[in-house]
Image 1: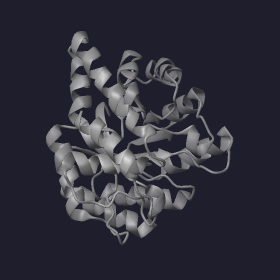
Image 2 (image 1 turned 45 degrees about the horizontal axis):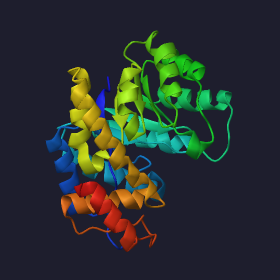
Image 3 (image 1 turned 90 degrees about the vertical axis):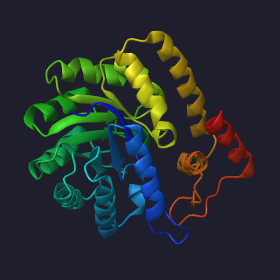
Image 4 (image 1 turned 45 degrees about the vertical axis):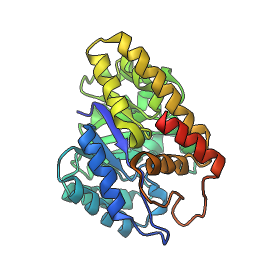
Length: 294
């Protein structure tokens, strides 16, 4: 159902914390013109944690109007508050989203009985396809393939998982244990550099932050894999490896991504997190510029 290259859209805010709609439109149009398979809004890179419920609804409507069905739209609706998740899923349905991405509950290290209750409750209250978002570095929970298999077997609208772990063995387990039972179940990696390993393991692609900067690089890599053009694949993978260095240049890495978007699109945008005065220093700016333009 979901295959290929998906961009978790960075949210561009103005200096006052409002949505910078004009520059957001420029980025969305570039991604669509480049041919991404879909755009994900309100993910981790999109700072879902910095929005109120009503602001999320307004932003969802804004992005969906700009996209106008020209590529797939997946909306991050995750929250510890199940009622909020259900409400955002309803909003996502109203704008004809193609699916929702739902992170596991965070802060408390819940056991898998509670994780099952969480996703089963959500699945019963929406018709939209659900992608489970596994991000143990942020949630302290690494969802097991046994639980995901159980959920996918019981709920037809649980159709995939975004695995953001620094371990390709996690992808392999989800592919081996779930896709063999449910062939259409999608296994997507959350680390950009795992695109080729993901595909080699039988996975379906990435939701990768670096596609905000150079979506074409990843689209070309995906096509080279499908075409079995392994000579080209090696060249493109080397470029991906180089661009991945961006994640190590700033903390939090989101401000580095925004700075790279600013440079690549030649935009005059605020690059800090919403309501935080975190700026990229001049040394890091130069390094980011070298990576983007090199």
